[in-house]
Length: 253
Image (tube, rainbow, N blue to C red; front, side):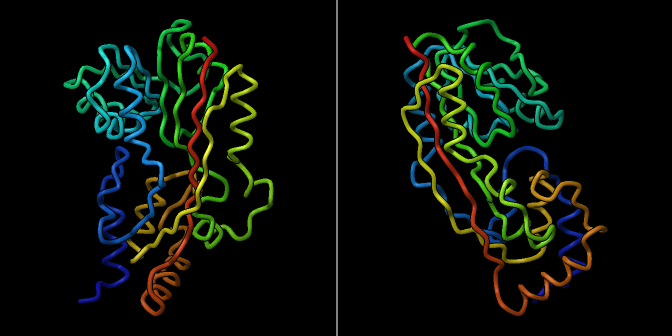
């Protein structure tokens, strides 16, 4: 039976958006995955080092799934609900979770880690990454690229200027890494098809990924949400495209 707009809205507003687990969207939204398999790459790097730092770990799900972890493994996170979730998940695996404001400096000494990782960081402080990496150490990160899911963003906010659409370009990341003294050894980018199958999936996504439509609330966008619900009911899934890039950079040994 087709669920009503009000039912879908109420359901999506009531569910928790803690952590970085998107399993609630199973069957309601789909997203192509990048071909490089970030978690597998992360696992391979973790297996070769003695110390690792995962920055902006979210709820710790990606790091936990990439184990076994090095003897010294630390994760940072700023959002209190995620700190609690990551602690519950990562402490039994031997990792320490550190509350950090995602502002420089990182709360670690120089050359503390062989490997620094981060999946979808919101901010990247390249000088700090270079500082805490030991000689020959590696930074591996999958990041959100330019104009990601902008079909959805612009549905609610209208056309965005070119400087906004170009934000988080992989070429800029590579230049910033080089500026911090790191050698970029891998840089890949892809645009991937994403489908939202009901309006509840859209609401959940925008509640969880809060920077897509800043200040998003159902109340503010209710009319626009209803129009999109009717469009999905009439035409099928709302299609957008996520932008992802992989960057691996190495500190001179």
